[in-house]
Length: 241
Ligand code: 6PG
Image (cartoon, rainbow, N blue to C red):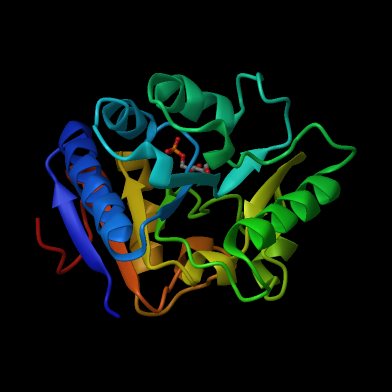
């Protein structure tokens, strides 16, 4: 399916649009399947989205929360994506604790953390077929990475495991793999800022290096939505605002 690209005037408008879309998709999943499984992005862009979702009125007991990637740090560490989401959103809503599936970073190694999280997905989604998230939120770094799928790292080639170990410089990270991300019913990138222009043009180019720009590997069979602000989208051809 062709990606949908929406260019919003600024980051505030992007967050507003993302909030409306995510709420719409949560309601749609719950209406169709009585539950919604959402995988969250870390980083700075989605934080105001999570803060906006904290004000929404949704059947939280039917929402199940996961992370697309996590740094291998304690849960209360400043770099923890789980800490960021709890502070911005989950600590402010009556969601059952059992609906929140954080990556276990209190284990011996990143490999053990990835294996444990993969077990969590097997238990949560049931069986051995690829887990199909209803919503997969993603950001994109200025190097074209997404989740913790960084340029020229081994995890880009992973086609079997659902969760593996990514590497940002010397920092190990736990990340969903490309097959799991691409299996989602709806993948939604939130990309803001002029510093993303170059990577975006490389990701959107007809031809390109998917090892250098890993976001090129995100090609879900179902829905792919790019929400860009004008600063990030500057210079992209045939993209309507
Ligand atoms: C993380 C994210 C990462 C992020 C991009 C963009 O753990 O940091 O999952 O993939 O989405 O680096 O980050 P910004 O939104 O801060 O630009």
